[in-house]
Length: 166
Figure 1 (tube, rainbow, N blue to C red):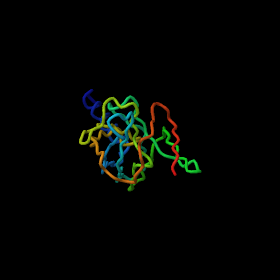
Figure 2 (figure 1 turned 135 degrees about the vertical axis):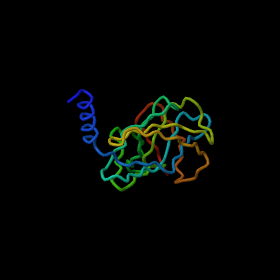
Figure 3 (figure 1 turned 120 degrees about the horizontal axis):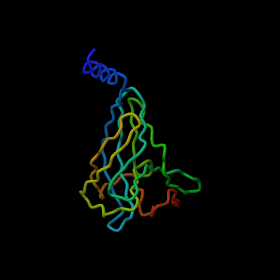
Figure 4 (figure 1 turned 90 degrees about the vertical axis):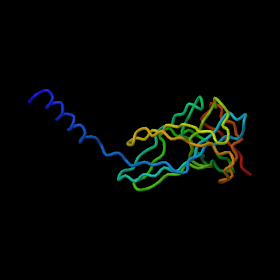
């Protein structure tokens, strides 16, 4: 066998050995902050997985903030909600979906480098365990009304935040 034939055979073997990637799509994405002077913002969207295997959103990056993390809210009882970093990310079931929504799981931007203005576009790269990196252009929508969860809390650089809801 010639070197070229061996190389082609090796490449073909590698191609067939790669795992099948889940078919991930992102829908209904938007980002927001609480105002012009806000130090934090967030992105929300629905992740659809039409693949035959579960996938895991394990990271998010963006150049709009000093820190970009996957976050959730956890009810601590007595009307206290704690916002926290979720380093393991979020599972997206096979042939299912996972919603990142206000008051729940979301992408958190801490230490905004510029204001988030209505109509701006935020570029976010989502990293999945199986599907790899998916870059999404997310519009800023400061007027959207969904599950009225105020974002006036200040995240700064802490990973845990308490909020009192009456």
